[in-house]
Amino acid sequence: MNDLQPDFQALFDASPNAYVLLDPDFHIVDANEAYLTTVERPLPELAGQSIFEAFPSSGASLEMLKASLERVRTTRARDTLALIKYDIPVSGPDGEAWEERFWSATHTPLLDERGEVVFILQHTVDVTDLQRLRQAADDAGISLAPEQIEEGVLERARHVQETNKTLDGERRRLMHLFQQAPGFMCVLRGPDHVYELLNNAYLEAVGHRDLLGKTVRKALPEVASQGIIDLLDRVYRTGEAFLADALPLELARTAGMPPELRYLDFVYQPIVEDDGSISGIFVQGHDVTERKRTEQQRELLVAELNHRVKNTLAIVQSVAVQTVRTAPAPETFRRAFQARIIALSNTHDTLTRGHWESADFRELLEQELKPYGSDRVRLTGPRVRLPPNSTFTVGMAIHELAVNASKYGALSLADGMVTVEWQPRLGLKGESWVDVTWRERGGPPVAEPARKGFGSRLIESGIAGQLGGKASIAFDPEGITCVFAVPLTVATPERTDSSAA
Image 1: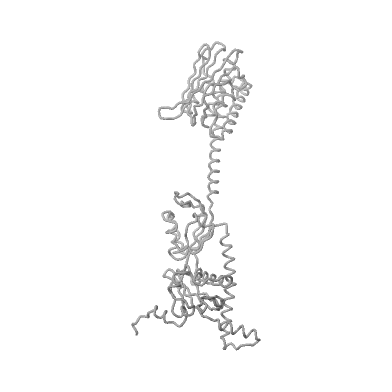
Image 2 (image 1 turned 60 degrees about the vertical axis):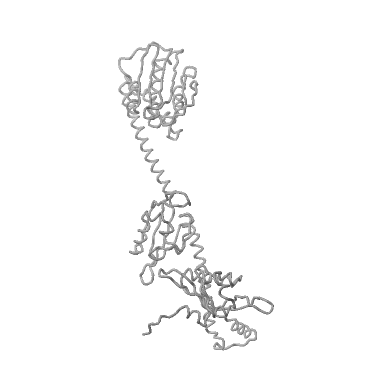
């Protein structure tokens, strides 16, 4: 056995065949003596330049060369250009000039241990004389024997080139469709999940970052702690696809900003080669964040509606029970119950105008007291909004006070007057409250009733019991005074004084 190891650099330099070595971005790294002699250029003049800069061209020749090199970089397979016209600069007695040349070139990828392209070896053959001989023979109508100019080899090479052109056209069309697809897609290669191919939608989903040639762990570091690498490893190891339905994922889509929560539908599909081995993973999916948020909002609205309906039914049931207890006859029950349901409906309308977030307290008062005339009711207080859970109870309390005043109190006489004053304040723990005083004057003399009616029970038990507030009613001879306090959500101290509209 010969223990001598071949010196590949020496073999490269000594080869009679013309070779030039390119990096994956098509910059010239090295060239042997045969190549430098063919192109009549020294290596220092070429090294580091793009091959397109070193040998500028345009039109079909430039596109053919670019397409061939791109195919090698993308497919990692050898590609052949049977015949390409590519002029080169040559030195002459009158200085440098461009000389028409024809070439046959083979581009071979050199791969690293992960299968990534690290260099491209171009083997170039100057076939200018053969091409000119063939053109001259064609012009003269002479048929040359294949062995004279190795016509068979050239024809086969041309056939390969034409096939490559057809395949390249198909590849371009598929790439166009791939890039225009509405869903995001990418191809990951190898056990480290290196980005080999991705479309515009994928870049949009992750924030237009530099991904090609990088591993997922390096390109999207924020997903490593969210289990994505483990999922990819499992698919690559087992060959079983993974399907995600609205998977929540934190993605750093904007540089310098914290990750944002997105919801993604996607599938990790293993790429299975002819021999059954797994070479990578195909990713396809959609960003369904807006759909997910809409669904969450809908679920929230349904739950809120269910809660409101139950609360309203409970209030109606309570009103019915209390009205039955105090109504001496069916007709009395009907009128009282109907009036209370209408008051409940009006309160509901007030909340609806506030989108069920809050209700304006002044509007609630004006709604109940409007039938009695603006000259007999005075409202004094800043703008205050009641939370939904307080609005129904307070609305019913105001209704009962107004009905009682119209039947037995200040509003039952022509000179009677009702004044409602309110003022927001902060509690001991910083919570917001509103203190309300309902005062009647100018009505008939008042005496404390022998038993409490529905209105009194509603005010005292409803406001105190249901809302955690405070309420009291004083039956002064000159008129009723009701004082209560209820919790708030919003209170803006903008004082206004007016009569009921």
